[in-house]
Length: 242
Image (tube, rainbow, N blue to C red; front, top):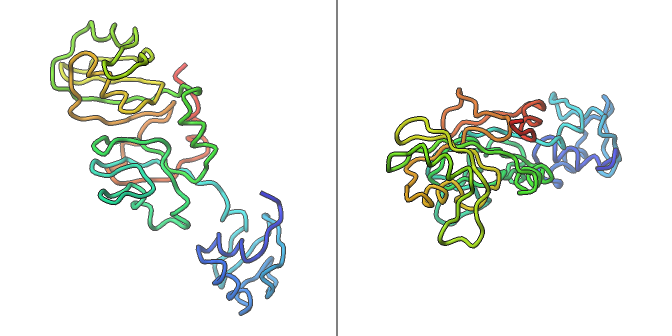
């Protein structure tokens, strides 16, 4: 983005109004730039300029800063921009300015819970979801049948699902109890964790993602709750477990 932008665009983004409403506010003399009233909507301002609408003052660039949220995804919601039949997780962000610009970073199944990143940074979404990045994602799974120590070896070798042409990349399986395990994958293929267990004739009953890269799900977040990520936490997502 250029260092300069139209005042009506800055007002629209910073105060979550349409460009038409922003232009009207400017004509009415309700917008100040660096404590000076500006009435021309086409005026070019700097991202570092301070704009004020009545008593609400902030830097112009705040309205264009990329946003990153950690959500503890609840069951029963889908990771999509829209769905005719099911509620979407983005509905949880209705209070955010320009909520329509937010998107899920990857997808969790309708019945899968846990760590989901939501952002308006398209480049970031591409990096995190690209198989080339091999960002590890950690899940906790409850399964139908007892697990065996040999399953760890099978996951580490890379499994072949009967309905898939391509073998799955090696995955790390850690047994937590007789029917509970932690699984770390790096591919991000469709229904990957569930299909890995199908490869060993088992079935996932419950699935929760708890980590992406080095970022762990905040245990204080209840299902359906979210919070902003710090810049340091965003960086953790792009790091592996090495």
